[in-house]
Image 1 (cartoon, rainbow, N blue to C red):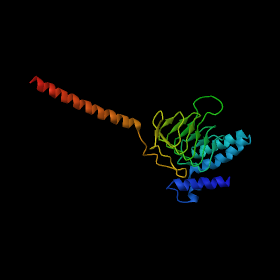
Image 2 (image 1 turned 135 degrees about the horizontal axis):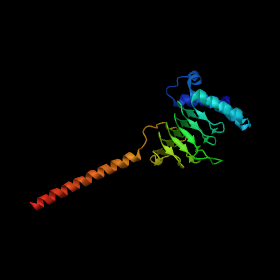
Image 3 (image 1 turned 90 degrees about the horizontal axis):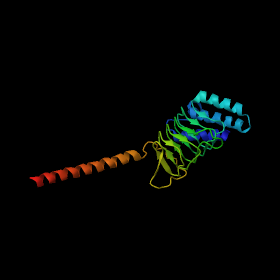
Length: 221
């Protein structure tokens, strides 16, 4: 338990430039509080004290604004930044060194039993407001853009943007496993790129039409 707490504190200090020292993290970071309470609730859940686990997770939600079901399996070094509105469902599995921003949801899509929530690989960044819904896998070193709605498998080393989420490879280059790429702002926008291409094509066609009209007028004269 204390080993996990030290790793959780280190994750905040490593990834949040606003975190100045350990005491500030322990006293002022709701993401850290939610993780400490979740690890206690998860212990109760695994020992079949499920009502007590749910009560503790409910208290954690009231205290932090972060809802983590006590059945969630969380790896090492998770960092929940700000965290207000984060919801993580029961059968979610989260790998090591994952970063989750406020408003993100790791949820299910129906009332089916069994595995119904996402499995998140290592070194994944889930940006603000992203929704991951269903029992699919998000590969290692991937980034989910802000506001994206992801409903299917995400390959490793990928970037996902849009609604529904579309996978955009990042130069087809692997991100080193020791590196966590926290740049979740400068993401590609395939919709904007497609509109730009259509705009340029329309301008080309308009220019050709104008040239044809000029030629026809000259021939008529």
